Image (cartoon, rainbow, N blue to C red; front, side, top):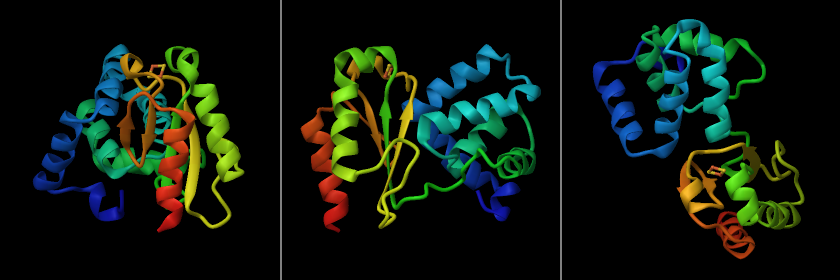
Amino acid sequence: MNAMLASPTRKRLQTALEHASGDKRFKILEVHMKKHQFRHDALIEVLHKAQELSGYLEDDLLLFISHKLKLPPSRVYGVATFYHFFTLKPQGEHTCVVCMGTACYVKGADKVIAAVQEHTKIKPGETTSDNKVSLLTARCIGACGIAPAVVYDGTVTPRATPASAVEQLKKWTAK
Ligand code: FES
């Protein structure tokens, strides 16, 4: 979220909410906020969950949180930029978030992440030296029915395999 988005137009908010309606990560986040009864003091906890789901805090997530918690976007943006553990941009050009929650783990997420690490030579939380790919992990992105799930640049992908993950990485690095 840039400074302009700290006070978004109605249209910008609408765009974020439309994005939210078709994206599983937002639904999971909403469940999480509900668990906290949409309390304002749960903001940091909610931001943590949002970052875990996406790897970083994209604009639409911040707008969605501000809308659901009924907090001014400037406040949400302010908190997200204040704490060093929040990231507003993925470090790499591409982001690969491998879900390591129980359902994904038992369906082979450990093999998927091993293949990604082997191919990229980086560990979770790191970015390749050419800045192409950032690798992250999540605990459960709420897509257990399609486990193991991997989120490539914000798109939840079902039934990942080591081969499909490497194929995706090759597409990114070939560009
Ligand atoms: S454990 Fe991976 S989506 Fe739930």
